Every structure is written in structure tokens, then in C-alpha cells.
Length: 116
Length: 114
Image (tube, rainbow over all chains, first blue to last red):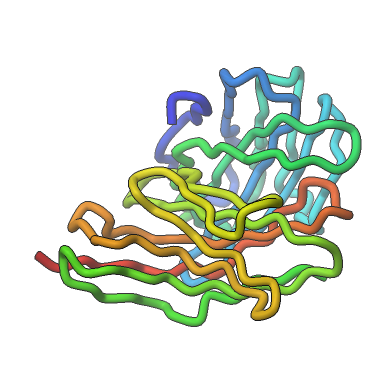
């Protein structure tokens, strides 16, 4: 898991707070992802960045705002969240070409978010 | 559209016995199949993948999976379970026409009793 790190590991925030989640990958990959993991539900892909360009936004509410300043760092900015946004947020990275690939995604340990 | 089914929420097995965690999939093109494991308060760890070639894929920690195209299955197996194998296991699939998008199953909890 040291290949992909996430901070903080735990976060408690109120609905009016603004916070950010950080992800850093040390694998030399060019694609990064945000997933949401809620109990009893499949992993939900939120955002994909490839070569720092956002290539997927899976109908995520605007209170979640991603930022990818370079291929090693990915942020998820949080603003006026709802209690149902409480979940484990996972970051992943992979090496991807422009097109099809057989890349494997490697995950960070996640940030456990609780919205009060 | 791609989909993955893990029909068992939980699998119980005694230590030393063989284990199987089931996965079936649906894709429009050729499948790329993955298994991940998640321990408590941890992220997902990659176990193994099938891209092409031999239908029996060997992965980390003694796990293997068998790709069966006619049954559209990719079951995870281990000949002899360990208590430390107890965790949440996820199957995932993407097709060879899509761009990176992995679709995950709902997960199967494996409990290995001493």
C-alpha cells in the first residue's frame, strides 16, 4: 500500500465545512481515480484523470470537486456535504495508454469520511 | 454494459480446506478480469488478473482463479485456506473496448475458522 498514499485516513466534518482529501502515487503511473465505497454497495467510480485530464465524471454531485495538478497527485475537495456522503473514499492509480490497455489499478488505504 | 455478480455475501470455510469465491460477469467485448482483497480499514489489494492466455491464473498468497468463457465465470480458489485469508474479496471486470472503467462486484466476505 505504500505505492499509493492517502491523507487523512479519517475525517469528521460538519455539513457546512470545506475539506480536502489528498492522494499521492509513487508508482510512476499516469492515471488516477477516485472511488466511493459505501456499506453493502459496489464500489462507485467517481472521477478518472488520465494524463492530468479528467476523462470521467460519473454523475457526481458538484459538492465533490476533483483536482489533479500533476500525474502523481490527486485531490478531492469537499463542500457542504450530506450525511449520506459518509463513506470510505479510495484513490487508485494505473499506467494507461491512450486507448485500450490491460492496466491494473492499485489502491490507497482510503479516507474514512463521516459527515455529521 | 459490463456487470459483475458475486452471488455469495459470505463464504465460511475451515482452515486447511479448499475455498472458492464465485464471480460471474457480463461484457460486450473480451473480458479483462480482476480479483482484489480488502482487509479491515485498508484499501483494495490486487490479487490476480486474467487478460488472455491460460485459463488458470495464479496470483498472490497462493490464490488462483479459473476463467471459464462458456460459463462467463472467474471463480477465485485456494487449495488450503488460512485464518489470515479472512477478508472481503472483490471481483472486477472491464472489456477490451472500454477505457479503464472497472466494474466491481458487491464483494464476498470470506471467514476462515481455526
